[in-house]
Length: 234
Image (cartoon, rainbow, N blue to C red; front, side, top):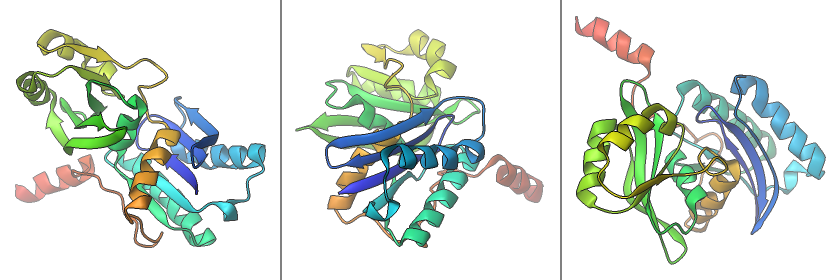
C-alpha cells in the first residue's frame, strides 16, 4: 500500500510518499512562500528524486482541515486534480489528528494547537492506546483560556505541539496547572509522513472517497464570510 500525502493546512507545506512501514520521501518547508508557489514543485521534486511513477500510488491523503482557509483550498485543489488525473481515491485526514501522530506512543495526553486568531485555537485531545491513536476529544475551535481550563480539570500530563504554541506559550505557562511539555522542533509542526500513517487507519476502515467528492472541513467561517454576515445582520 503506497500513499502520497499532502499537508498545506498551516504555515508548513509538506509532501510525502509512504509505502507500508517505509517512508520513501518527505519534503517539508516552513518558510514565507505561499503554498501555491511551493506545493507542486515539492511534489515534482520527490517524484523525480525517488523515480516514482504516480500511477503506482494507491491513494492520496490530504489534511482536510481545520487550518488556513487559503492553504486548505490549495491542498484540496492539488489533491483533487491529482486524484482525478490518476483515478486514485482521496483520504481526507483531520489536520489535528495528523499533528497528533507526530507524538507516536506518547504516554501524555496530546494537545495539538493551531492558531485560529482572536485568542482561539483549533485543537483536539488524543492519546495512544495499544499503539493506536485514540480520539479523546474531536477537533474544534476553542478559546485558549477555555482549553486550558478543561485541561486543568482533566488533571493529566499534557504535551502541546502545533503553530499555536509560539503564539500562546506564555498564556499556557501562566495558567496551566498540570504537568506539561512542548514538543521539540522535529515533531511540533505538520508532517505529511505522519498524515500518511494516520491515513492508513482511515483506509483500513473504508473511510475514503473519490477526488470529486472531497471537500475541506473549515470548522468555522472565514473572516470574509464573518464580515459579510455581520454587515447583513446590521
